[in-house]
Length: 78
Image (cartoon, rainbow, N blue to C red; front, side, top):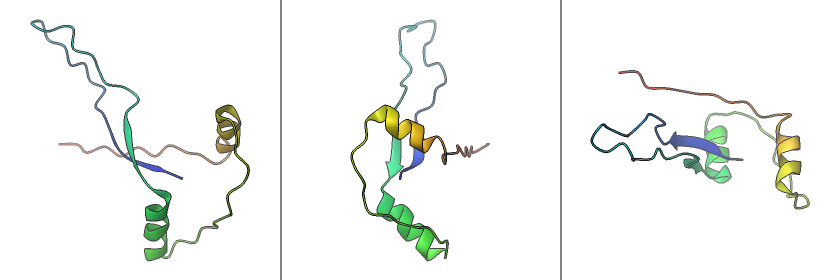
């Protein structure tokens, strides 16, 4: 389990003077599962923890995770 805590800004970076500046993509920062478990425990949120299973290939993990994954987006507005 991972929780994304920050993501690069996808706004264009180029200017008329320097149009070749690339936008960084697919860079995320997440917290470890143990920290998420600590947070849930500290806030009395129940969750089940299972022993690790067999290694899966990436497409298989995506198929399984699609059944219980949701996106929650929080933005800071100035």
